[in-house]
Image 1 (cartoon, rainbow, N blue to C red):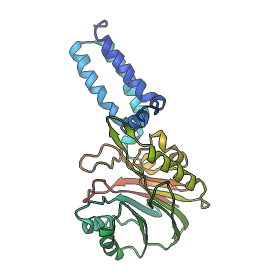
Image 2 (image 1 turned 90 degrees about the horizontal axis):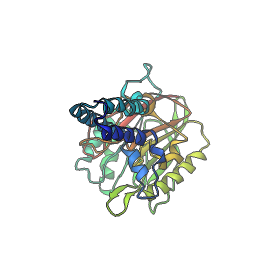
Image 3 (image 1 turned 135 degrees about the vertical axis):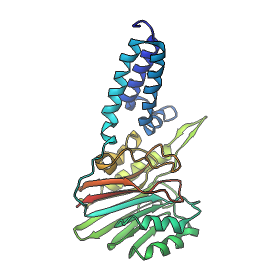
Image 4 (image 1 turned 90 degrees about the vertical axis):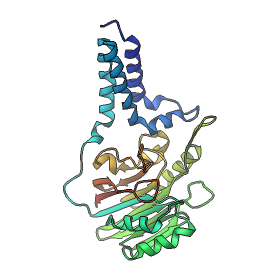
Length: 306
């Protein structure tokens, strides 16, 4: 019983090592480290699979070895699977949604987002054909709005100092504005990072996104207001080291007060959270996902205390 399943035990140790030392997996070849970190929580699927084989082999060694990856996973992600929302309501509710340029129902998507009752809504992947539809559908709920390139912001509170933010692309996919809430000014950034792909001959093609993350991180680092919110599709998770220029400065609302992992893409079967709400200088009280719209992303929302 103890001599059987040595290979299974070694596989369990490898699984634990990948989770515990994911930051040591190099990005030099195909950005494998970032690819691993994008889907890191799903490594847990290896645990019941190895458990099944260990039981079939009747291997006590493999069963004992499986304790290690289980503990590592719980240490990394156990805090995400419990409800952590604070009971008190927040002063400001925000939402973000990549509406998808090929969305077949932009009017319905706009109505769904407006029904969230968020004070500030950010939309990404806006196109010229659908722009007027979103503006018309949201006008009744949000008095103030601004669109910069393919990203936009709608607000119940006044906006000022709105301007595009350069993230090393040939067109505008990020903006910065000041929202004048009853509790004071809040700097809000909206960003849509370049897409990433997994290609057989190139690996995880994330170089352009990484450059944009560095530029956005520089912009946020230079922000003069103390209270900052970042909304958008970052095409990366909080675990991805390549987003460190941004994530090292800000706090994820989902990680702080979310209920579960809050996966947002793809909408048909969410596997990863690439749509983010991050804050600095304020306290998150709740984070959640909104119902599916006509987009391939789920909208996400959060409430914060100012």
